[in-house]
Each structure stands twice: as C-alpha cells, then as structure tokens.
Image (cartoon, rainbow, N blue to C red):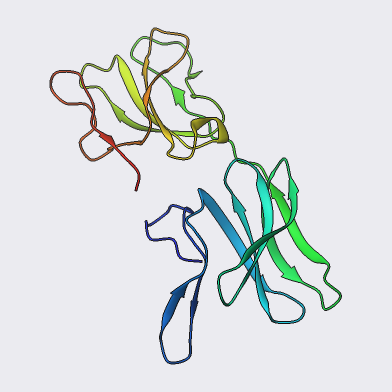
Length: 178
C-alpha cells in the first residue's frame, strides 16, 4: 500500500519488483488498509474505502474488481488457501473535552464521530477542527467551533493547518488535499 502522506491512509496499491521497479496498480482511494495475496497468487486483495468498505482485488496488470462490500470500514488481514478472507470491521471515534477558566467540569466539544482539534484561538473562544469520518467526504473537512456554541460550523473541505492555526484576524488556513 502506497500512502504518500505520513499518518494518512489515502493511497493506492503498488507493486515493487525484486529489481526495484515500482508499478502503481490502482487509482487513489480515500482510505485503504490491509492487503494479502489471493489463493492463486495472481491477484492482490486489499480493502479500500471510497464511500463504503470494499474488499477488492487487483491483478499485476492493474485490473481492479470488487469481491465483497459491507457498510463498515474493513481491513483484510489474511486469505486462506480456499479463498476465505480474515477481515476486521473497524469503528473509530474520537472525543475532545474542554475545561476552560471558571468551568466547574469538562465538557465534550467533539465534532461528529472522528475529528481532531488542531488549534485554539489566541483569545481562547474557538477551536479549529479537522474532520475525518465518512460524513466529512473524500477530502476531509475543516470546522470551527465557538466554545459558547452547541456545535462546530463546517468551513470547507481539507485539513486545518495545525502549524499555523488561527491567524491574527481570526481566520484559518485550510490545506486542500491532493
């Protein structure tokens, strides 16, 4: 699996020969995890998500086919000689809690099911999030949550630039994918 961006499971399936030649076999998937050789050794089986979890196969010449799908995030672990596949159905959820000055207890400020807080505004009144769950879309999403509001507001596709975060005017920089 070729994941060109560190800590991001977007990518493609590539084959590297013993002489070091690299050949990309599939298009870019929003998410891909796990691969195994087929029982006959003529295909690479892999799980990739682009709207739904799918077990796929690709030949050494780049012909991709769908084997099985499920309404879940799938990861193939192994394939038995008779073709049975050992797979997992995965669920991820993150939660972000806030305890501000004068707050008696912390509270959940999470944005949907899988997002990460990337930056706190200098005035401490808003948090910038990157969202990675299925509802975020192929290119993820950036949201801003005022801490006095009930939810984050989607700003657009991409990832929040956690190095720069909020700029002095209260705006943020959105890093587009691709």
